[in-house]
Amino acid sequence: MTAAERDAFLSERGVLMRIATVREDGSPLVTPIWFLYEESAIWFTPRAQSEWFACLRRDPRVALCIDEEAAPYRKVVIEGVAELVHDLGADDVWRDRYRRIARRYVDDEGAESYIQNTIDQERGLYCVPLTGSKFRTWRMPVRGESPTGIWARRYYAPGTRYARES
Image (cartoon, rainbow, N blue to C red; front, side, top):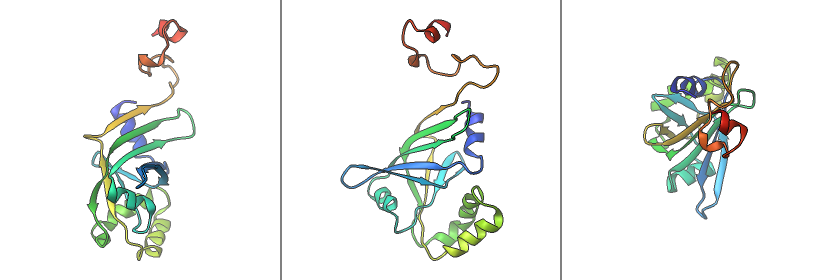
């Protein structure tokens, strides 16, 4: 995807993200969560009691997978370091950002209801900036594009049809 296509996709409503963190024993933990793409960063909010918040506190390395189930099967995969922007107890400082996160997934009334119903559940606010992170994007070709034109040449084994056509 181009940078513009990537940014548009990351800003679409309803697309979930899966965050992979590292448990204390070194095993992976993958959790589907809501997110927001603003200021060239991915923003998210673990609750104080969540296992993945404890993982982030101990080891901020993450892998993020943001994708869609329908064609053209766009995906963005990011490997980076999650930055704790606001720790527990500072929720009031960044609650408007959390409203914007919630509004990506439910209507305004539902978002406000969700926030009010969980206001006593402290959260941290993290971001993963694209700058400094390793990221890849991918999608299937769309109408009018060559099927060989969007993938890196390394995907085509020597001597195969697409290797000859690209």
